[in-house]
Image (tube, rainbow, N blue to C red):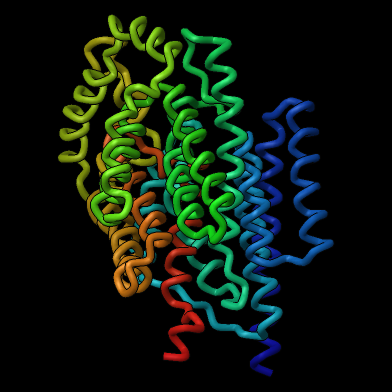
Length: 430
């Protein structure tokens, strides 16, 4: 009897979720052109067909999601979240296990509370997707991946999918940059800055796969992939993202003695890799590049807004409207605070920000303690460094709050936590 009640409750919640998702998708579709809808339906239909034919599992799901980064769009983001939820339902049905596991329940509960408070203050168009990327994505990723079947590891497949997609996007991005040497174009992405968050993590995934490769040919191919991804990043001319990669490479060189000399040489030769077309664009922008001043002005004014709204923040993306009345010169305007830590304080307040960052900190610490430290695993260390480098890049941007990079970041982090909690065969035999 109790089992039937539980099943009915799950079915009711699933029906409500499907109805809500249908309403959200319908509202989004009504704002799109017919051509966009046809392309979206074709791509999403292909995903659904593959999953139905092969079965709904976490590895297949993350592989499908990795293809979204070829050309990200909002509808694919929502559909990716829906696919993750379907994986959770399928795994629970397969295992007949009704329990739900969730790491850091207090932090997630706090984040949800202050996230919804912030959402209630949000009145700006586009603010809802920042709520989804900042609050709902972490929760869904952790719930789904932590409760997935441990006999189906997905981290390796996820890294391979992301790395291959990044190579394709980078090659096209290099071509576009060579054809338009004075323009800043983010390859197939709509934003030339946001794509660098994707490039940065994909770069370290490729290096991790090179350490993991058993054959020298495979190792060289993954190293070549990392170089192509880095060149794609360089052609978008995002300096802090490139600096974040150098920061991560420095950690790798410090950790891995066998490549220390070659690593130092490689870091030193990076300036020679900068293509002439990028230098031309840099010389043109140099006279009018006020990005540092824009950021300093934004951080200065953000401090006063945070001080006035320290507990609950001002709402998602409301800064873009509030700041118009604060900035003295239009040329210094910034749509967001250009710093994820400051931006979180602005939007969800101090308590919500602490909850958000504590989930990241505890997850990275767990992964380092369980995967990196015991055996000095360089594959795990590359992944860990990649996440640190992305957080470093967030000092001048809000990569992990933007829906594309948010999905990449939180799926990766949840997979890392899952790997940290699963006993390996060698551990069981010892």
